[in-house]
Image (cartoon, rainbow, N blue to C red; front, side, top):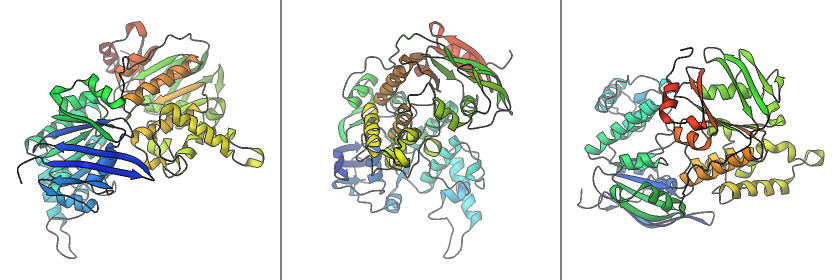
Length: 502
């Protein structure tokens, strides 16, 4: 390797459909084994820049220098051969294949023309996994792994292909705290072995804890690149959003009204145990719990996505005999699912089509024709309110949006229904700090207008900052509740590990 930076991106430009998404981007990955944090709002251009580096899409202009040599990948295979490995937010494993098969999908060790040695492939895979401290059987099918272990297999793939630079795109989105700590241990281990990394994340505390330098993108341009010890979190936020955010969690006082939703003794086979609670108009109620506590399962059961074993759901004090999503939509309940890609969006459909999806009954004119003018008007209003980064709402599909902008579309489609009850499951996951602030503001506005909000989150800070009271779950049961005057993280964690009935 020649002396000098491992990687230099110089004056990189990229446009889609005439809209410029990268503007003269200059970023340097300084030393072998260094970790560069890459931060910016959703739609700032982070993923596009990394896709150019990984050969997924070409740059319009500019140059890339890799280990002192010009680098111009024509496709992902070129990047792979050059030692660039991109680990996507939505992991890229074939779930029906084994760990070893995924690791050596392109080039299997010990293979000859027309032959494939599974014995050699499994042996080599075992070496790499052991090198990372992973006690995994290479013959295990990927579908049987937890999200954390799938993430580790993606890293093992990169090591098996002798990567010199590994790019992580929001790697902790679906990980538990334990899995995240394990990931960070592995990343630091790779750094010590001389593998350089680019770490993309909206969790700025993680960037500060893990990275050597940080580069900030805003609107497709680099605002600055600094050593991590020379930049504070508040400065990072200001650089990202172009303004100072004095209060990240904009809490407002509200007057609570009548009980809109009431749950009595809800049970679900081996999952939920005697759950009882209520939501009042104008109230934001948090739901906290550790991984596996049953928070998402509770939301899905109430909304009728999954069946319930026993218990009663009351809406405006009338029993709902058979809860079902279609009934709830007609009667004023919105549900932002945790799984936005598979359950919250129609990925091949346009941004506009997704935004009006939950309000189609109000988009029809006489004889069933769609009111296209209203579709445009309503979708434009949500795009503006949530600052959704899209270059063409009619042509750009949900799949083509960044993860954070996808989340904004999921939330935005429900804002058009003016819901009486809003159940939101991890609404800010994968969303940048500026967009989080706007989402909190819209949740507050809904509550001020009389909607009841059930806010499910694994982030204690945002629940403490936004909610009027917080319920806590452990092992499928509610173990306690805190009013706003009693909020603190220690009390929440104590309830989150408390066994039912103790």
